[in-house]
Length: 170
Image 1 (cartoon, rainbow, N blue to C red):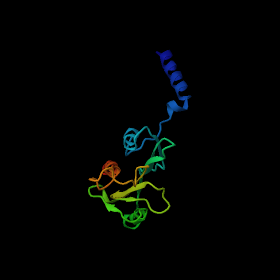
Image 2: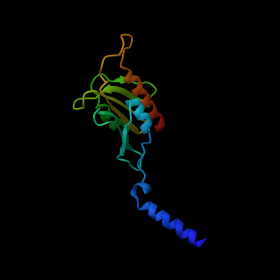
Image 3: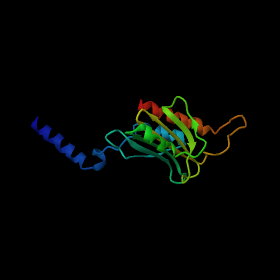
Image 4: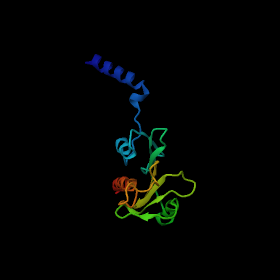
């Protein structure tokens, strides 16, 4: 029995000598890579940064280096919601559209000056937590795909992403 114990301990030590076996990659709390890939249209590389004890983080899902398509979900806790939240909304260019049923005060808009062309934002909050969803894709800003549609189909899909993020913050 004692020999088996030492053998297991030695195997565990060897397994931990390989860094990938003992380190866990941070996982985005609001969306997984498969869902983000389905939204962007292919396999994505995922990265999670800025993780805080409050549970704040930024998740980046990138669709291949050549395409430039990106889905970024950033969640931040605000200490003074009434004073801080307007700063998040200021990221929008004019023409923000209110979104009903997605957190509090959610809007969809094109990114303001200085942002790359083809960027759409959804900004909202759930209680004291602000979320900013950035979608950068070549199809944003194109005219609707048929005369009967009044907006680009990406807008509907981006609202679904925002519903998922806001729902997970409740």
